[in-house]
Image (cartoon, rainbow, N blue to C red):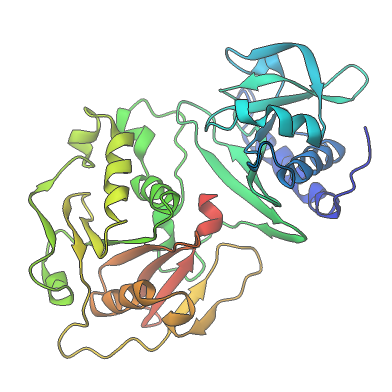
Length: 368
């Protein structure tokens, strides 16, 4: 196996190897899990993905996902008659065929230990190592949750010489960051289990349209939130739209509903959604509630190992959209605000009663 020339791949390989080996060991005897790659394999896959991300195929950045999985461990694999070398140039050339979500290039060693791309896989086993090209020079390492959900958990983000290991602990104990933390329930047979975290899917879709947007999650048992928006709401919905509620979602296609509601956030103003997933309207203009003080500072956290919390004015996070969201949460302490920036940043605002401050959780690393 050729030695990697991408220093970050070497720097991250040992910790990633321990992580994936530990995930498989923790699954317990009798639980089918993916084979954990060794350090050299991790280095080679990340190295190939990184250099491919810096190339162009007819002007486009290669969008590829590399999964360390054997053909036998993937259901209904598409196998090539002649496997391809794990090489940046080769990956770039085949990237147009595999850029759609859910398609992985399967990587596995031959009898001599050399890594080859054997074809494509749509289903990979639990705890499978996946390296995905998110942008030029930006590689995301993912862990497959397994089961019927098909969910992935971001483990690390590698951008140039920067390495960020993600942590799933709530940085300040407020509980608001948990809105976007996937709950993996591969053994559940309930139709609702596939959509246990609607806010995560909404966040990904909000970030995806690239226009920026805000979504306000308000308590369903009170309407005090109306004191913080201009009346009437520009595009109020009556009666409330129930497409995301449990009863409706198990009957109707949920993905298209999520895409539709996330698309509403592209309209100037904020989308209003209750904590019971009832859509109340969109295009809402946020104002400071009567008698309340302007928000002066927020506590900024990131789900990154070793990242320290910072105190700053909300304008340091972005423009008017971030400032108004922080003000809304300060005035309506039971509400949460999700804000997507046009530059792909994503922030969850929530009130910490323990510290009596607005907390701004920068969570775009979870959404890549």
